[in-house]
Length: 145
Image (tube, rainbow, N blue to C red; front, side, top):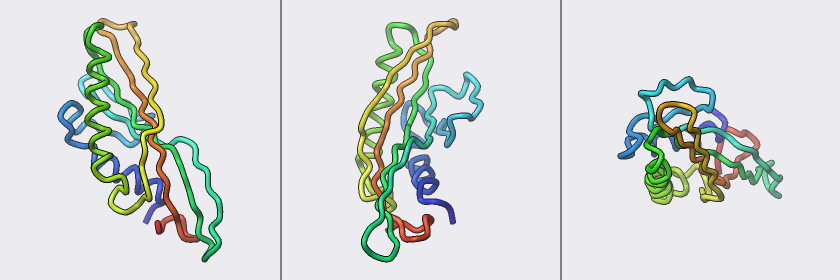
């Protein structure tokens, strides 16, 4: 078994694979070397986590940010539209099951951060969507409650 955070990233990868714009180009790492033909793509990785003990059985109430980062090449006047379309698909897919199959109490979009680079032949846009995942674990961080 794996830490619940890993299970959450796995569940997100499964849920987000096959979306119309990004298709199967979904990777569970921010350091994955991705060639240009793999875009548009999604990267899924951890942000910060906070936890606090609960009054029973050494359980912990946890909350962490998971970032779903969309990346796409598009003509200058279309890059924001492409990123917004990817955001619609990602947000709708996660909204359909905020518990991620029972791993989490909730998964909520809490922010987004766009960026565009125009260094190459075609602009490259990035949109980092931050989702806050609230979950509980038993004493063993591999077991969600």
